[in-house]
Image (cartoon, rainbow, N blue to C red; front, side, top):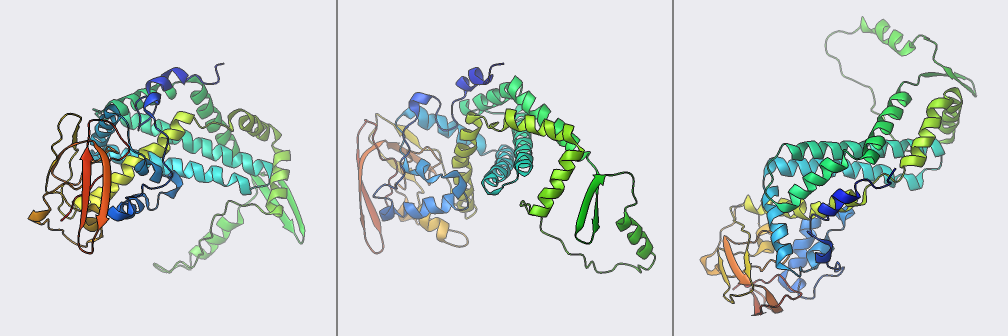
Length: 386
């Protein structure tokens, strides 16, 4: 069997940030020198807050190099402005985050079948995330190339032999593990484990005995115990006894571990991180839009040097202000040239891609000088406030 049967369909969908591999640029790990002058360091910190696991900051530090990539991202961002679609992506992200949490625990576990059990749980969570997103995207209208290619990729991937085998094996072994029943007999310091033979469940018997004394609604004094992921040596010994009682089931778990422990598809892994670039930014601007401010997708041209913005505003100040935000007519100026391909902080913006940017700070204003040129360059964001 081909170990990567989805390879051909993966070629049609490369990335949710870059349409083709040739468009990808190396991620910049440190913020540009002008970010603090424009308070863009505060903006990026706010956008990425609570999403440290995705390492999103380099996406906001790295300028794009082609008009095609800017257009590719803007199309996807327009699609994601559809609330039902955005919630589908959020649901996928939550499930994948749970999967990563399961996998992240493995380094701290020491008992083999404990590790293999969490691998199984992670695989089940992964399959659920993939199939749910594939079904969701099948029932929603998509206009962007990126989201359409993603839908096509998921449809082909979920039909691939490797994915179907992973899903079938995981569900099968999970069902068999859940069917295991055993009894623990404790006498003093002695613990014995045996197969369940229909012995009485005394907890139910005790509950029925005291049920007749209940009068109306009473306060619940039961304590909710935390469910931990660890296992102590006593629990590990009990598990060893259970393995001896049901060797066939645990032999299948061994086979599942050897066959599927590296189940995560690399294209899915990259998508899971990159899609958060859009989600994080949309969450950020939604908070500002609630205050009454408007955003747009900027028109970026290589031919016209004219820069025009209407109802522009300071994104950092708008986010920090509480309550509704009023735009001063004097701020009808350029707020940002967006070369990361997000929606822009203005009702309308037309600009040439900037070649150079410098900044000076004063106590009550920030002024930016931008020298424009048709050539593609490193900087994408400018702000002009007075």
